Image (tube, rainbow, N blue to C red; front, side, top):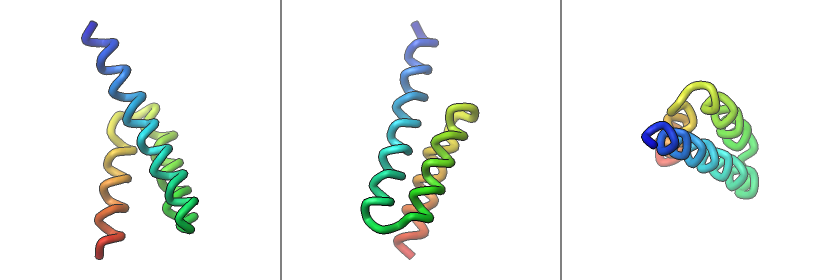
Length: 63
């Protein structure tokens, strides 16, 4: 049961990063979109990469 919950959380995290990437493209930020889609691809292998990338890009945007 715990394994299924962990797997679902990873999938949701990856999906969230993909959606952030697609929204970045839509908002006219292609570099951020590519970075987020790349992070989503990496997050399928390494848990948390997509979340860290999303947070880092949000912090950089606010500066």
